[in-house]
Amino acid sequence: MNMASNTLTDIPGLKVGHATDLARATGTTAIIFDQPAVCAVDVRGGAPGSRDTELLRPDKTVQTVDAVVLSGGSAFGLDACGGVSAWLAENGRGFLIGAMRVPIVPGAIVFDLLSGGDKAWGRFSPYRDLGYQAAAAASADPVPLGTVGGGTGATTADLKGGIGSASALSATGHRVGAIVIVNAVGSATIGASGHFWAATDEIGAEFGGRGLPSPLPADAHALKLKGARPENTTIALVVTDAVLDKGQATHLAVMAQDGLGRAIRPIHTPLDGDTVFAAATGAVPVADYARDMAAIGFTAASVLARACARALYEATALPFPGALPAWKDRFGTR
Image 1: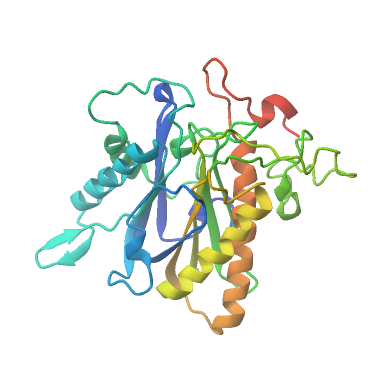
Image 2: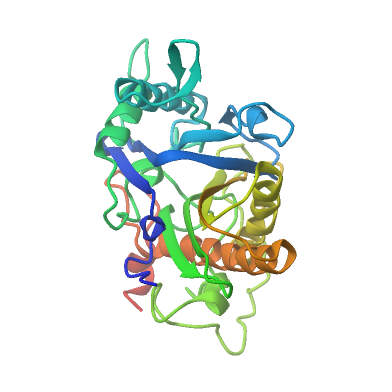
């Protein structure tokens, strides 16, 4: 099976679109499913911001979603889901209730309000329009990474964050992909070395090929934190082409969270809102649930860890005074 782009769009049946507002140092990313997809969520951070995550619980009536939104803007950014819903409604998508269709669009946000740019937008924020633009721009092309879409204003403790994505084929033949906004209170790199914590999962030189430092630097386990305010959060979506129900997708989201733990330290703090969605397009049957789920979840954790490192590796610094440097500014391409 071809996983050529090493991004989420290697999973058939979905499209990804970005809307970037560099002047405001923010943006929105929309993942649009060609057909409604089973979706679940796992929330581990202490300060989450989300929309419609409650309906993703296995006991709730709605079984599928039309799209997932990952946005900047903190609570303002939740308006982006409305813009994506508007685009979906115009295109005849949504949960059928009588003669009406209601698009199902859960989403999560990161806090980027202090990353620079002009946030004096007046009465209404730009996120509804950004959501519509992201949905309209969605395509099956390889996903642009770094300082784009919902990752435009993302930062970490010491380096510019951003949007990352990766994909892989599980041992059971199921495709698995991840897309993530890394805006963590912690760090994705080991001490001051520039080596990524996710190095054990790297394929080729997708984020520099540096591997792990040997020996580990003296400051490898020193605590690095962005600040003492809830201006953080890493949010992600993992997708598989397997046939899963909502309960099984929930377990996939739980397993995928391990990828954040392998890529970012610390993670799931009271100052983060770490949220991982998991979706299944249902194209490939599962022969043995326990065995196949172990393989799919194992792969999901790995692709999410890789996506986190790629977010920093592909990022560029924002053009504002005091902006954090990008990984490539500090450490070069390798």
